[in-house]
Length: 278
Ligand SMILES: NC(=O)c1ccc[n+]([C@@H]2O[C@H](COP(=O)([O-])OP(=O)(O)OC[C@H]3O[C@@H](n4cnc5c(N)ncnc54)[C@H](OP(=O)(O)O)[C@@H]3O)[C@@H](O)[C@H]2O)c1
Image (cartoon, rainbow, N blue to C red; front, top):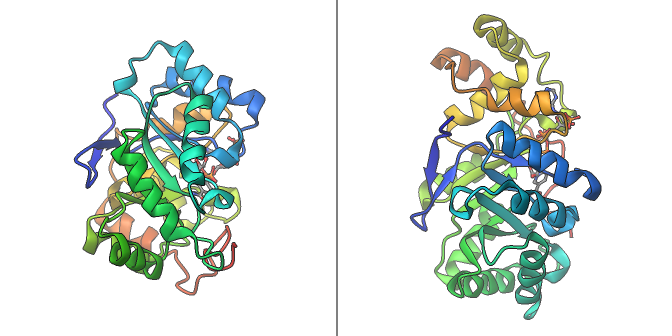
């Protein structure tokens, strides 16, 4: 299956559908990523804080898949934003992954009270210029953080990876991204199983109409909205189900009905608030 790609401001293409490994235990990561690669995923989203980069790297090495057919993302954890720490952190991540570069390196959270996110972004620019990450971006950054990064460095993030699913669409962040050429990645795309998305009539109705599962409908909604998405599962049948989303299309009305799930007051959020995680 040829997964569609999105073009980043670096000129590089990112597969729009990938596989996320948050909460995949270290000793299960190699198996999960091996299965995901067998299913057909070529884009893996990990992070230093997930503590499973070694397992991801082992699966990549064993797969025999040429490096240039893979898109690998990892992230700088919050306690390493200051000084030259990001340089040490990327080298540690690359060692664990067994790679000489990643395709995308992200600062994980702005942690605004620490006020080190601009420094972290300056170091990511150096990391990109040194060839250790082909593209660079951020995660969980709000427009006020993004504006400051651009004002102080002149470099626009290729990606902002934010909590995004039908119940929490962060229209302010997606509007900033649209205006500035930043692409959005949806984390928690299925609401992490914490929000009753699958029972929602707009999702369940579209699933019935297309003979697909509610999860497939939600993934399809992300794709049709133009977001990059990487649902996580440790179950092979779900990995396959989540990848099997290219043989149907939601109508404009179905997309609009799913858009309307967002309560609009932030109450659909299932993860941390970027201003409160410090
Ligand atoms: N940047 C950040 O701050 C941040 C934060 C969170 C996540 N992320 C990234 O985003 C990725 C995806 O988000 P996420 O893992 O938090 O949440 P998610 O993908 O929305 O949801 C994962 C949950 O849904 C279940 N699931 C998966 N496929 C399913 C299906 N077809 N039907 C029913 N249930 C299904 C999984 O259970 P099973 O595993 O048991 O199947 C798991 O409990 C992460 O893995 C990570 O790479 C980034």
